[in-house]
Image (spheres, rainbow, N blue to C red):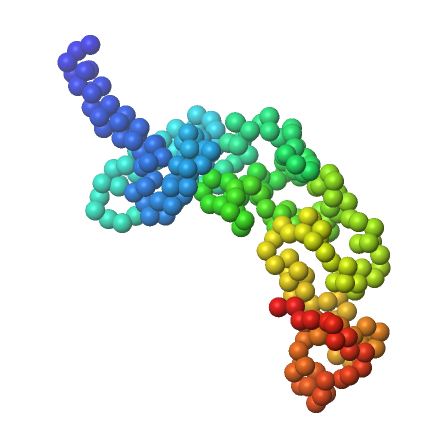
Amino acid sequence: MSAVSALVALAVLVLVGVPTYLALRPSFMERYDKYEEPYATWSESTHSEVACRRCHIKPGIVAQTAYAARMLGEYYLSLAPIAREPDLLQPPSNEACNRCHMDLRTVSPSGDLNIPHRAHVDMLGMRCVQCHSHLVHEPGPHGTNTPSMEGCLTCHDGTTAKADCSACHTDKDPPDTHLQATWLVEHGAAADESCSSCHEWTEGWCGDCHAKRPRSHGEDWRARHRYGVEEHRNCEVCHTGEDCIRCHGIVPPLNLDPSVTLVR
């Protein structure tokens, strides 16, 4: 190799090879405020040995080379005394996830869950990150990285997908009491500690339901509510006496159950 060739090779190494290597390292992201926290959570996660580009850039020589070229430019731009927050990384694609997790799509999680990954991904065309949104860079609503039930219910609402417990759970069929027509009215008196085995997957699970407008409160409820009160007076579960007084001037005594308490 001639001296000129050696100098060219050295220049390419110093000006291209080393900067590209440094820019492709996850630690390079720490210089940007928007990636500082994601980098910190990544460094403590189970994916801490996986480089950013393996998840956030599609597999293949074209996409990976284009990203490397861009990061070379970002290396030199980062040397300039200006504040920049470039958008460098995209949500992981299914192809990127499948590089490591293909086998996991054929099995179900531990416990009583039955999640058909192939049905969700191959048949429904869903993206992995639709369910696994809190995986590496931030914990989910319950402080873990596993998908939360709230996320499942965005689709499993009874319309988009089945809402039956047995659709996802292998040993949580609704008890016979829950199938009775009067259960929604009587469940308060029957509630005990066993309820939490199914329902305590979110904080304040009683209030989550009681804060919703009942089905009976339709557009004509104001005109018809007296008939509902005559059948079963439980207004005080949600309404204070002031709500009645606003229209009636008094708290109607009809069919009042003094054992009913407010749900806050």
